[in-house]
Length: 227
Length: 227
DNA sequence: ATCGTCAACATTTTCGAAAATCCATGGATC
DNA sequence: GATCCATGGATTTTCGAAAATGTTGACGAT
View (cartoon, each protein chain N blue to C red):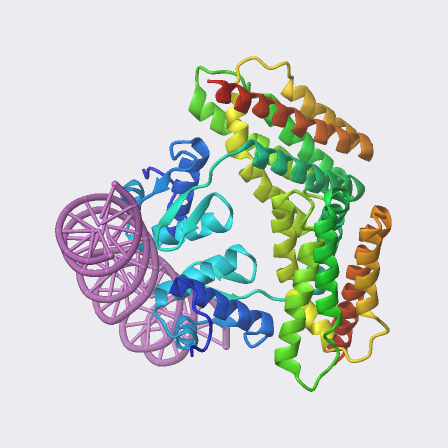
């Protein structure tokens, strides 16, 4: 049995491995990435590693300095707020279109995705890694399906990219223990409004949802600065 | 004197060269890209060429098939309309924010950029390549400056990417000889409304502008299909 | 003491060839 | 005749080393 599902090229494996390491935080924001270390991590030569870094850079997860190599993109409150506002705009519109065009099958997928997500407790800390990964996946699926009926491949693509780009920030917010939030209920409200075709209300709920996450992470930034 | 301004890495040169070849149409939509040919075109080894293709693929100009190489992304009416709608949404919002936050300096840059663009006749066919390249550059600058005061790096980045992604379609529309359009006037109206802080009117003018381009290219697609 | 120069070193970037994969062709079997 | 499998050539992907570039620190001049 292999350690990890192998993609069709080593470069894709390297991309997945580094991407995961960055999102999980084992490669820290701002950290310089040396080829020797990444080659050890991925178990391959320099070419596929470099290819992975080029892709990651194009997607904003790493930055490159000519002839000085690559490093993990830093995090900042400014970027977080920027991402959240962009998501409110893009996913808000995509959701509106999805509600407009979605059929019964879409409703079904949405219900199913929400169910899968709601069944998994998010806050549980006893089985942290595996279960959290699982929840993250279902959470991503829910948001993907939510806008899947919008009819615009570009909107879907951009929303997907912003979703993963928000990932590192979202994981920070999970580490905040007590929040006065019921994330399940927030998702539920979005879904219910969507299925009842209350477009404006659904979009409003979605934007609230993102703003709440943004607020939580912003508070976290401020407490960290205070240290 | 060098043929082309050299970037700091060969890979960046390769990216620029292939990007230009695709945008100018000398590499045609759907065309398979073989490393041997691209190496001849760029005058370098396979590594930087491959790196360029990975970047171009991440940005949507090429597509990759594992172990089967790369090819130029195809064009379609559907994608054109999708791009235009996304641009209306994103640039519309970016323009609104820019009008909200822009100061006198922004107004000045905008006036200057428009002046530079208006001075260059677009339709002229006698000095096609050089002058058209020049106009394209000033046109891009105008649209870039228009939204430069929006305060959102992400919106600016996304709008920029959509702008270049619309490039191949825009060049098609230029080849349509007689259009009942006055592109200079369209730009002028956007700029005037922006400076007069008529946000809604400016956004409306911008969206009209894009829709007109879209309509022109859509007609072109239809006439080509009829052949 | 400060600044600039110049080695030696560390690291990235690029090369040219080897390895892996795909695709077309032809021959064997049912 | 159709299907399956092997074989060869074409192409991409990956490797390991060479070349190019950036960095550090010592040394000398101002």
